[in-house]
Image (cartoon, rainbow, N blue to C red; front, side):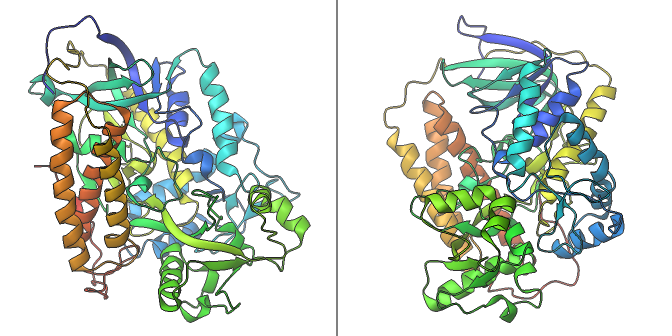
Length: 534
């Protein structure tokens, strides 16, 4: 887009900080900044429509005297298949206890028990100890509700719901020599107008890229907006090929994206074929407690081998009282669908769940562009390596939100330039919205088929060929028509898909979540896949 003199439709506001995204990372960052700064919190739908709100299992942290920082670090390294950054991993784990204490101080109602710590800790796949603090089986919802209430009441936080960022405002776009982010152009969806929001500091907390795939456990908002915006702004991204496929998403025609938490396998759940045969011990000595990449590939293998639509997670050895107490939401949801999980196994399939890669940041959540931060699933901190350890995602959000806040609050102010309004004088109204929906559907289907659990060179080549065709169509559409929520999301998803495919093509080995039939072995030295904008 080009820029023009101020127009009557333009709307401008200046803040100290913009936080884009309203999950745990975004809300906790906004709350930490708001004590002394004017913050705008931007979210595409409502404050509570986030991936955080969907999280079931819990948050990993060193909270029990029998556990240790060293053990948590080692478990994270093991899951990450040799690619975890040692400094980032130690940083997160060492700050995990303080982050949980902050959440408790905010009022998050974690499940209590009569242990010395006072809270119930569960165990999930890949963990050597019980270190998952949770609120029954709806931890994310409890966190989200607690922080949302505080954000809505805070006088220094301006909440902009039903707003989506079109793009970042950078020095390059303003024709300035110095490199910096100065805010963002934001579409007010309900009023169909573009706002110009300036800020000293901007933080991307937009979540992951689940909606780039046909099957996902993520909400519809997971369209990787932050990664796409940062890339266009000149920031590096890393390890985009590592997309975690959650092994157990409920398979039912009336259940959309409903996750069956890993904690069920932590409590003894067994994966079975339709005839009752247990299969995980044939794939890994850890059986159902193997890491997610191993379990997802095992399920995919068995489904393809036997021509199955799904496999089954069996927790019938547990009493109805236990299941209703520990997994109330899953128990109730399945009951509503006619599945009594105390008597019948749960039909499950793998689905895209978490993006391990993202925008490259340092230990203060700073990107390559001064004034721009990335936190949560949007960022690549180095913690997750080639495969995220269960329940390490929310603790990463909390720890890096605090780190970003500390850096922002101690930064020296800089003089802001005058920001021009968004120019839409040379575009018209879209004539065929069907183009967007067709391209979205095509994208998600070929990404699942060609860039899913098992990959080959030929599949990746086919995917790249199709993505380039889609990019040309979307770029032409974007250049000629007024922006809309759907167009912005599709543009970001297509770019993110390109980055995922390109990263997968560069990794000539099988490691963690990236499994290639052409390169089944693992290289002796683990290296990040880092992409740099031209």
